[in-house]
Image 1: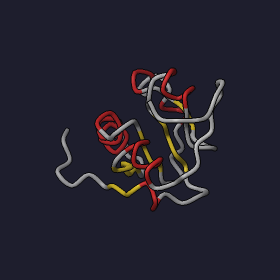
Image 2 (image 1 turned 135 degrees about the vertical axis):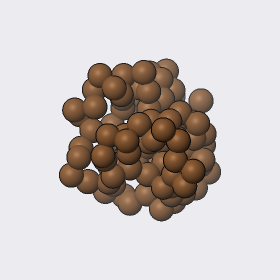
Image 3 (image 1 turned 60 degrees about the vertical axis):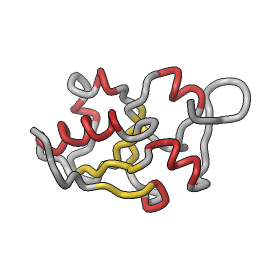
Image 4 (image 1 turned 30 degrees about the horizontal axis):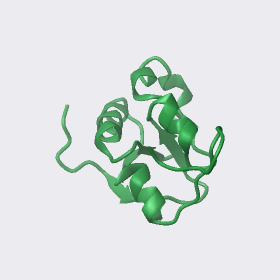
Length: 110
C-alpha cells in the first residue's frame, strides 16, 4: 500500500529520547549512526517486527530516505505509529546531530 502523505519529520525534529529505527545495512551502521538508535536492516524488518515498539512513535531512518519510506509504509500498515526521517542519515549529519561508530576512525555516513 502506498501512502501519498507519509508522516515525516526532519532530522532536527527527532526528539533526543525518540525511538530511532535505522534500517541501513551493517557496513553503513558500522561507519556511523545516531547514538541510541536501534539497528534492524530493511531486509530483516518483517522477521524482526516484534522488536519494534507498538507503544510509542517510531522514527525510521536510512541513508537518504528511500528505504525508510518503504519500511515506514510497512510498519504503518501493521498499525504502528511511525514517521519517516526526511533526508535520512545524511540529513541527520547535516543538521549537526551527533554520530557514533562501532568501528575504527571518526563516525561518518556512507
